[in-house]
Length: 90
Image (cartoon, rainbow, N blue to C red; front, side):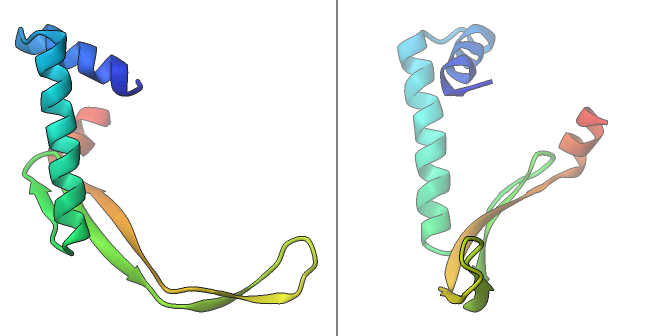
């Protein structure tokens, strides 16, 4: 399922117009993104938790040449599925 299919499914299941469903889905994504960029987490009970993880700088190897290279420290978004989502999938 891609974003447009998600918007269509939200519109169908909620009775919203496609335009309103687009605004709702975009608002959810924007809110999650802005919360994570502040370093906070988004906890949706029964669904899962979006959080931020800091990765340390490390040394890796260039796969083409084999020479060592430095991998910069970065911040990565993480998602941990909740019990309700795990149970629904299994």
